[in-house]
Image 1: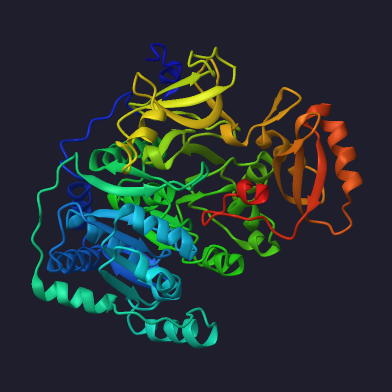
Image 2: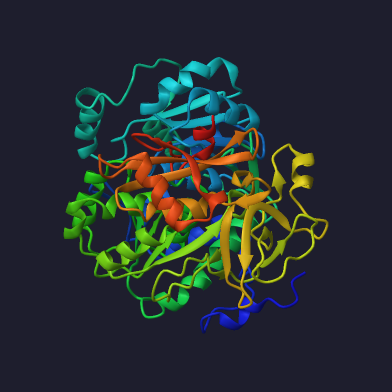
Length: 555
């Protein structure tokens, strides 16, 4: 146990040291409060179409009732494979309200990745967008799914949806051919509506989500997140944001949902927290379309909360048209999912007037563990402090606590930490200390004030002639070089040194040369940290959240 908890001295006024679950018996109970409290508020805006809290209440209940017509076993897993469209929220809320388990599926998965997740989770129902139906078709015979619910992009958008579907299917050709037995999303809702919903008893120990990890350490594993884990994290984030929202209680908040809500960061920090606050959620179905995204931002000067990742902020600020975007109501920009680079953060603040408050979390922790206070005046470079009721230890390779300022593995204890990995008791044990701390696999440093800084992933660390090299540090330095747009660093085997550093670079200026990069690194870094190999590539491999995938570069 960390008896000191030095961070508590630096908590903003009004943030409690510990949270309680407020007497709620499930996430559902907490969210249904918003349906009762704010029926006439707009809950979702998607492609210009608006859905109120009353409508979201009805639609999600109809989805629940449809699932109940299938007479599934208690604790059945429902896989949901949508980008940020209303169907995602309807299906996710509907699954929770029926007392079943949500299995979030990355909509960009290949057939192999989808097959692994459906088989591993044992999902009996899959709700999927028709754009990805051809992927499922490839593996339909190899998985335990008994019912597939298919939706189109425009299906919940009213009359406008007809045009959206026409463009998606016939003009942009976003829907490859597919064919398998299924039920249409709206038809399922209609059946549910006729059948009527019976609210089940849900308790805090019930599983709410099987949240699959990115597979950074081999095969993707399902983190078992109980009702109480997610509930605790929502209350932790709400308490943490309170100082920034203190004068806003009567006004409706506006959350920008650009990161896919099938990812844990956006699920909790946008979807669930947004509904809890009775906020308007502005859904971005394809944040990779930066031009379309900027057009959306130009229409929404009302955005208050903007969660994002470094690559997204970077892509926006490097577009000349972003200079026209005005966000006068922006209260908080939250950076998570990967390290935010100082160069990106400084330019973001210069253009928007709001600093990026960096945070840190994992699928296994529902996700938020640490975050900078929303009252920061500038980018700090750290991931902030542990949120209420959370304890962190920095442990060295021997499992003893590292002194302040010394790198070690970040280990976490708190009510948001998962119950374990789905059907993997040995792995669960391997990732827990005897005292019940979750071993994150991330290397960090804690200051004597309790602020934590991420150094790197343990698995990504490079050892050059016995010296430890952390890719994040090298990437940060190289990304400051004029002419470099993006950079990622990996270790490659070397006969004499064990490993050497190799840098992959996406150019910003076509005349940038290998010799210039090597010379620049010579001026900035000690010899063992310098990349010995430079490779110029056209684009970085990225996850659906925009996280650069170093393992793809290694492969």
